[in-house]
Amino acid sequence: DGLTVKAVGTGHSFTPAAVTDGLLIRPERLTGVRKVDRAAGTVTVAAGTPLKLLNETLAAHGLSLTNMGDIMEQTVSGAISTGTHGTGRDSASIAAQITGLELVTADGSVLTCAADRHPDVFAAARLGLGALGVLTELTFAVEPEFLLTAREEPMAFDEVTDRFDELVAGNEHFEFYWFPHTGNCNTKRNNRSQGPAAPPGRVGGWVEDELLSNGVFGAVCAVGRAVPAAIPGIAKISSRALSARTYTDIPHKVFTSPRRVRFVEMEYAVERAAAVEALRELKAMVERSGLRVSFPVEVRTAPADDIPLSTASGRDTAYIAVHMYRGTPHEAYFAATERIMTAHGGRPHWGKLHTRDAGYLAAAYPRFADFTAVRDRLDPERRFANGYLRRVLGD
Image 1: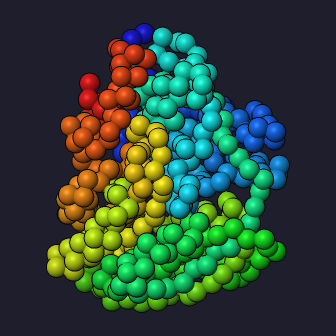
Image 2 (image 1 turned 135 degrees about the horizontal axis):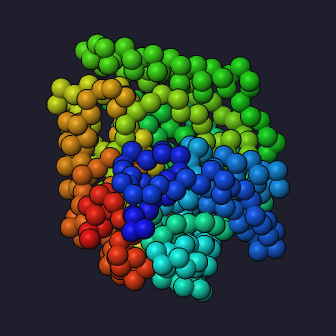
């Protein structure tokens, strides 16, 4: 009928990546595991399958993804299409764990893609922003389920930044949160363990993950929104509330956690070598600006990959994510952050707030033209275009 078409997952992205004034496709019935191939070490799932269901199904088969992000409400196709990632020395991106995919293109063709079958489409569609077609099936590389030991502990900002390279190199998965208006951070190191499993106690886990990280934190953010002048004092208390703890569990129970406090977010990927300098500039900006920021800044890492539009494409990467509590003006904070990150050649997360356009992004991604060439071939009439894609990819 000449309509534009967009597929939308759970609506987790902050950008209008899936917005359309044409036909919106929702994949609630396109779910479930279609094939588990233990010999090949793969699992094939329908594209609308939530990550939560994928993780639970893999666990039931004694399997796991190698890495994942910290939220699992998204659909698998939405997660890879916007570049969802965790943190890792050797692995991070969910898209980098894709070994095959099925894509319905603008002319109705169904392409089955892998590294040796339509390789240019496979490379691009692993992180395609919905610009190349509608994903209908994905095949992930998986491995036998393993245990992770998580070690969480407070650490001073200066110590974390001074030891950043050491902490990244010495742990399979390292991340930390810096609390603005303080010199305090909370660090998390996840490493494989021989076991035995020792998950957080029911009461202790609830206190840390629900009461403090969600309940009390949400109330504190609401107070800060009402009385911004109170935020620096609250931050000092909040940054000391989470105590050190160590626990061991299966991967998705360590990598992911509930996130019930609503916020808006911007995240930039910079070269790992530039991360500490960029973060120190961000800290100095907050201190001199008069801004009041109640949400911690999250820092993660990823190895270089070969996906054209991956934020880690071609370079070892660090991610710096800033947040503001919902209903709190975020524009000045995000604009100042973006100036710092773009000065370091930063690449914005495709699903989080930013103001970059195709002119900037074409210079930031060495293989940007590879992606747009595939798009021109598969969707010459821009059947899958919308305002966001016209801004970030051009038209």
